[in-house]
Amino acid sequence: MATVDALLREGVTRLRAAGSETPRLDSELLLARAVGIDRTGIVAHPEAPVGEGAAQRFAADLERRANGEPVAYIRGFKEFYGLALSADARALIPRPETELLVELGLAEVLRRLTSAARPVGTPPLRVADVGTGSGTVAISLAVALRRRGAARDVDLFATDISSDALQLARENAVGHGVADRMRFVEADLLPPVLQAPFDVLLANLPYIRSDAIAGLPIAASFEPRVALDGGADGLAVIELLLQRLDEALRPDGTALLEIGSDQGEAIVALVARGLPGWSCRIEPDLAGHPRVARIERVARFEPPGR
Image (cartoon, rainbow, N blue to C red):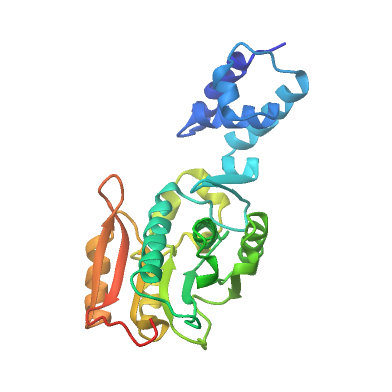
């Protein structure tokens, strides 16, 4: 009977030869799935024997990964912001760098909820997650607000052009108990007619240059291209959203848009050209790279009732 250590060594060798960027991590996650335990159990007990059935499951999953299929799709979920979110080919796999967008969005919403008194009858804040995909940002935000007892003070909208992605987002929202606090809307960026402008708008839209798609790791070829391809300069879809901000945001509203690590100067210039009278400040990630663009009107004010 093979041991954990022996199977991991075989897995690492197979995946390294196949070009995996993280052969050890991939092997540990897939073996944990095959055995039916957490990855920490795999790491902690290298000498443990692995039954024939589990070894066969591991071999089958290993082959799928060697052929390029993302680990998240094989496992059926991806960890993000402390949550396990269902993941499959209907939507982009959540990336760790997007957690910054959630953190900034949560801080902005809480600031608005706590910076001034909210008399009884004050309408909830309107928050939109544009291009929600599997619901990564919107659901993480909804769960965080629920933990703080603030869920009922926010109307949260999640939009996507893909009906398949929206269905996955609904499933994730149900799985985390926040579906009743969210509204899912199939739309190209935003609905053509807005009931009212938003206080906060979040978006992780496609920002990979079209000519760079082919150079991505093979796992990306399993993801929807529409969720990756940002056009010739990577900012084509984002620019379309920028054109809607004047009507989509309240006068004191804030948009937080995730961008590529090389797009900080480009989006500042884009906002300067297309949105005169607005500011664009770049929020860096932990590595110090540009990651989120904070876009607001320069002359901000607090309207009555807020």
